[in-house]
Length: 302
Image (cartoon, rainbow, N blue to C red; front, side, top):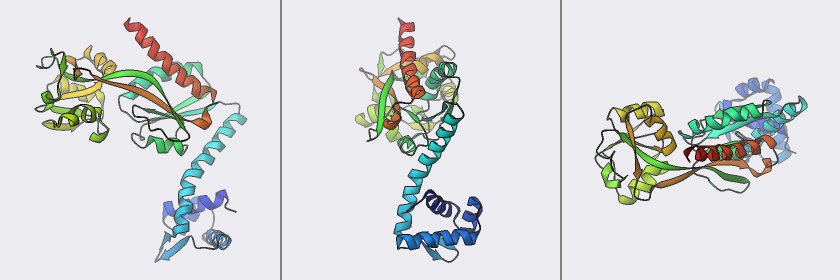
């Protein structure tokens, strides 16, 4: 029978590259670790590792166990953490993964009232899951995924919570600033500023430029919204952002907002969760609060 310790052993050996380092990580002797591996191989009737000099290479069986370990260990660790929190009378921690840069500013509007409503729940925001968040959700590394591009997969649920329009942001004196909308051809001689994301994940390319076979004069990236829009305000380029975020910065900087195409580009922010977590109260409360924030924003405009 494969036990949790077996998965921890193969994971540690793969992660640290040698029995010595793995034994140190697991706080056991190297001989004890070697014995455990031999015993498991005897049970399975096949080798897990092949020695190549001082290193170990996983066999087909070893690779299969590694794949199992990468999925199961985070689930077990998450279960341990949740059960300890329950035993201590705590609700737990809501781990949120971000898959879009501007969503962070939107998220702040939801997190603050959520923390007030649920004082016994902590929030941990992880921005490293910019693409690949679905895998993190399935592997129990996060509990909720904020994304504009849901990826529907068995066991996951994505709910739309916020509608927005993607727009072009230009300097206030730019010739496009007074236009009702911009056409793709208008960007052929422009410097386009975006977040550091692959172009096949950027709406300005996939829904606006690519269909018209237009390539901007230059494409530059910026990690932060503030720096990006400072550059736009100084005439260093144009950028595509959600309208609600762009209009917020228009009150601080000499910027103008222009619709992308005659019909515009409509988008939504989705919150992704595991179907198995449907009964977690604070998780459902966060999603409902996100929807409420949307309604409040719409009411403030009317």
